[in-house]
Image (tube, rainbow, N blue to C red; front, side, top):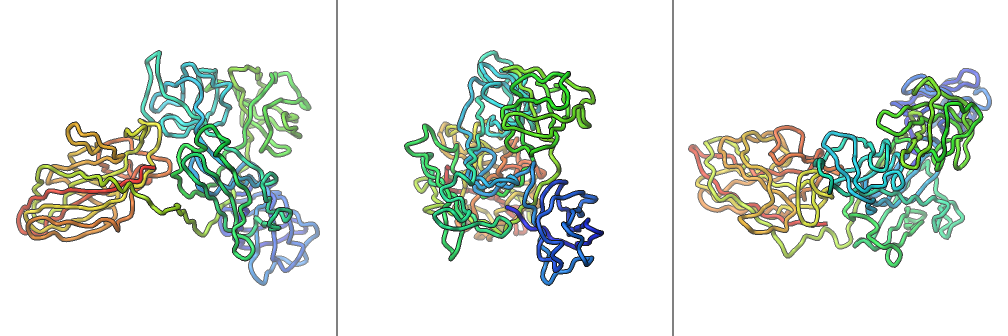
Amino acid sequence: MMPSLPVQSITSSGQTVTVTTVGAHNLAVSTVVQISNANQTAYNGNFPILTTPTLNTFTYQAITPPGVTPATTNTLFRLCPISWYGSVNRMGIFDLQNGAFFEFDGQNLFAVRRNSTLQISGTVQVTLGSGTVTGIGTSFATQLTVRDYIVIRGQSYRVLNIESNTVLHISPEYRGESYSGSAIGGFTVSRTRDLRIPRSQWQDPLDGTGPSGFNIDLTRMQMWFVDYSWYGAGVIRWGVRATGGAIIYCHTLQSSNIEYEAYMRSGNLPAHYEVDGVSPSTQTTATYSNTEVAGSSIFVTTTEGFPPSGSIRVQNAGVSGSAEVMTYSLKTPTSFVISGRAQTGGSLSQQNFPFSSTASVGIEYVSPDTTVVLNHWGSSVIMDGRFDEDKSLIFNFGSTSTVSIPAGQTVPIIALRIAPSVDSGTTGLFGAKEVVNHMQLQPYELGVITSGPFLIQLTLNAFVTGFTGSFVRPVTGTQISSSLAQIALNTSGSATITGGESAIAAFTNTNGETTLDLRDVRDLGNSILGGGFSNTASTNRGGFYPDGPDVVYVSATNTGAAAQTILARLSWKEAQA
């Protein structure tokens, strides 16, 4: 959580020390760094950064002038950022909407549970490509705050501005299916909440005073553990590997017999490492006028996460609300003592910021560019009971008319993918349903009937041209399928496929049926953020992983001397989590 940065050299001029790093250090003035392993002790210690002349140099002031320059070491210099503001490091099992993870914000270590199960009042109307959200029966100003994250149609957005109880503005612009023009109806909105439990409140704070007696050093490499029991009402445990290889569970959070609803929207989550440079934010609780002078206080809901002094950007409600950058010299839990107004970065004249219970005035820390690099060796996600398919169902779909392929040509026949979004057993494009589809799809078997020799390949995430079919739910006639996948059939013998990765290949019988076992092919998934805005087979990088779900193609190469025909059938299993 306090990762080491590689050092090129350390030199001094009097008490001023210059550190040159191998790459960009991403550190800013006032960040505290720990220097160790120099042979000259004057270089070693904890020091705030004074200046950052270049991307890979910074300076600090030693307590006494080092006697030798440049510094020497018998091993390697150690450089660790240990204290900063304005960014956080996270690691655990989580995405933007749900999960459990450790978080270090440069000051404190937290165990965090994230969920997006709380639906706010009313519904909203949104338009693809627009950052404005219009509410019907909503209470944006009382149920949300500026810089909250919300979920609309499975996608996360940050609240930039709350103009009223029925109008707010988001980033990025809305990416899903539009809903507008009707006075009744709309989409529901969920608020993402992070329950941040500080280390001081853990059952074992890992500071030597807890039951284990273990004192963790965040500047050193650690093995971190997060596990949870699912079905919405289980227990989350956070832990570390400690002395003798034992796992110490430092904190446990119970949900059963406590919560009223599932503690996360989904338990199907990825291992995730994240450096977040989004600045801390808050909003005002009283009017701050344009006549206020240095020494006055601006009152806010909280100053948690802000440094003791620094700069803030204050902005009135509305997408074009006036903004002013101010400096503050002191903070209390609910106020900033202002030391300077109309600073560079906002309006150069003092603005009026009236308080309103329905139009929020937002405040954001004008953060330095400290985004400490997060290093890791690897991760492992283990499911109790391993990967469990829905063993009662093997989904099947195939072509009903033959495709004629010229000699020597390779043609994609079938495409299969996880549907981009789902809701209540129904599927759709990204942003059409409430949840990004994170199920696993396991290929099972491929069967083909050919009139001659073919090379059959399963190709992952390729480009296709001339593919005639679109992705649809694997339904025949009026049959209802419970599959959350989508399939597309090609009927053109002139379609082509390029790129991608061949997952498995085999030659067919000269004439007749060939069956290929696909159970050793890895399961298909979806990207963490989701994607997939079209049902058309992709001709470029858009639409499939990492911009959406994996797409696997069954392609056939005619190895004979004349045109031959082919029919294909594909089977798969799903873990519908």
